[in-house]
Length: 325
Image 1 (cartoon, rainbow, N blue to C red):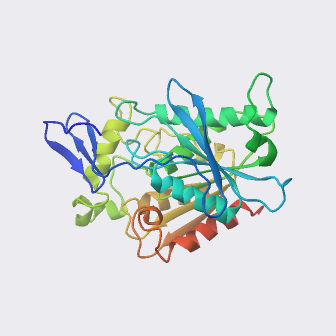
Image 2: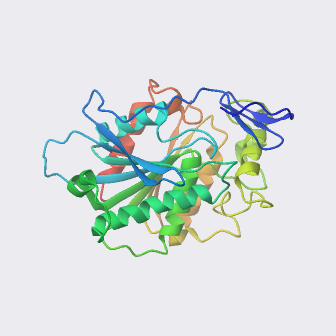
């Protein structure tokens, strides 16, 4: 954990504090856990893709009744405002175990570089590199070490992207980049964005109410501070990295997958950003669904996994991953 900056605080939440010099101070100990075999038989392991950048994937393999069964592959990007959290954190390790168990899918949870040390597009570069690696796995490219779990159990024609908060933002950006590829053997079938982190210079919807300026789990001040340390130097919140529906952003119709599932939470400051994204997807003809969880706040399923609304959310994700319509 970095030493607190002597400068004044720019913004804070129960989880992090951002100082005027851009220093990020996590306020909750980041509990990292090793790969394991959980109580439901889900096995996990880490595969390092780039020792120099530290990029790795944590693979999760569920217990399967049929040893010859091929199952969908879910590529997951964790949240944390681009600046905290990890694919190895207890939050995400426990959650991906649940997803793999419930949905009977292989999960590949991505560890990417974080801000402020590595501004965007570093995280996008890292996450997209995982798709490139998976494409080489699917093709069994010469000279590429083939992972036995993926070779034996992954259906590379049935790949999905998913992420929460900043990870939802990454889903979109990786989906846009994938439009420029025509991989042999790797097919992206859909995307799941949970409480995605988007923004613009103009406030909208729930960002305009007085409560949005109060220090809480999320606030306008905190969101602005996160974007200030994450976007390229000199960029504002209408940059395509922040605003996927702005005039500078690629048309959403180029997304390679047709099916998209968007989750928003009633009390989340990012709620109307997710709704706006969903509406834009529908306008360009995407098969998009919106799920609004009443009475819940940002990433409630991680912060309060015992919530009565968490199991239905996981069930909806599982159904989406196994639906061909």
